[in-house]
Image (cartoon, rainbow, N blue to C red):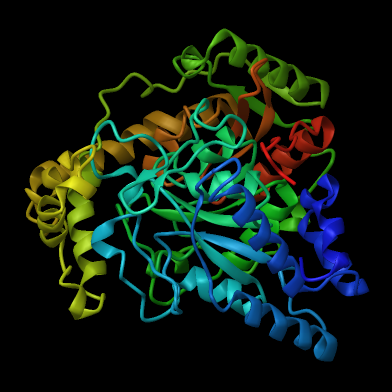
Length: 494
């Protein structure tokens, strides 16, 4: 420890501190951003690489302490830039940073790749004064590499574990490292990405708040892709307010990503304005029990039933058993298969020539040549995508895209929302993530409780495009009334 003042931050209450509480302590001079960075670095050293061995952080930013010190000096001279000034934030390993850190999507093929410039997301965080603390492990290629790969595994980073039950409970994917790290208090918050369930799953599995925004609310520039139809970054935090603070910084239009120019109403919004303790009063909430609740064990079902009862007590008008017409349709990931090659090849054209990885075909060849290290679970999805033209001209692709849009909107979320005049639909965990993902619609998950064994369960609110204000209002009201989140108990913590 640098000095005695840091020791107080081992207190459990302070380790669960909100962004606002950390700001108050920095403003009062009780702690500095540099000291916060040291705290998190020490905790990562104690509990991520050893101790509980969560294995969630791939690498730390070698400039983090210097950046934090500079921000401390700036605070003294001019005051804080924003609510994120001096706050340590972790990024998923598929989000570019134009510094000394790598961006690899968990792949050994890109282990030496350092982006030439920040992603739009990273640039917005830096502009707000956040300290990018490091990169988190993830399911390799955002779980679009092969079938049967465990959530949280990558050939570069190994297996990330769930801090609530390391090796016992699924950590969720593919933003597994971001979820586990924030749950374990290795940073104030993190940024994940989602194509279908990859924020919602690790957030719910790690008792966090995760916001999967409308596709187009946050820029995709500088993020290793799966599919432009569904990809988005989003915040992962220990509270709805912290997630809303992050979303406010990230929801800015980007001329290099035209979809962010399609909706100006929410660009630059302060989403903390929608935090309402009474947000559930008079709201109409549909419960998507058909199929989705069938995934639940008896213990998890009991948690979700209690959560639904709580919605009623908080003044919501709950519509039980709403049925999404396309729930049992024959869904596929064909759109992702076709878009992945086109989108990844476009990204890889920007990497440094000395890496010799300029296309999906190069990735596959690298993996084959290093199969002992790279192909523990195979690469069937990569090879399937490589077999497409990469031009997005195939009739099969266009037909699948049209089908996905129709089934997820007109015969999906739009249909049930209009039929019952709903403000949101509730799903357990990430089990309903697929349909809104294909529609590009937003969701927010919030801790709902734990099984008797201690496994977290999340409740997810989903709505129509750009309904983030409503979803934040509903989730915040539930969170504040129930206060379900509790920190994991890590073994061997001194």
